[in-house]
Length: 50
Image 1 (cartoon, rainbow, N blue to C red):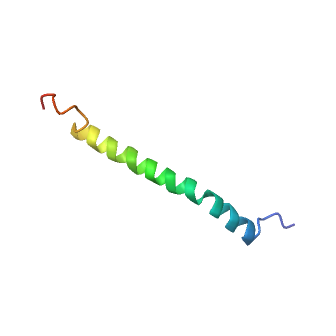
Image 2: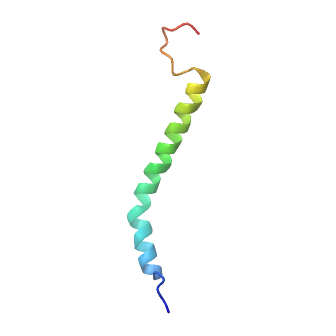
């Protein structure tokens, strides 16, 4: 019993969701950067005492 997706269906799914995954990666990278800065205390306003 074949109920797998065809290669074409998979391909079109990937194409349709490529931008979503790209954005998600950028978002995760962004969060990672912010977290790193947060840990280093770089997120504090420049006026605050280190």
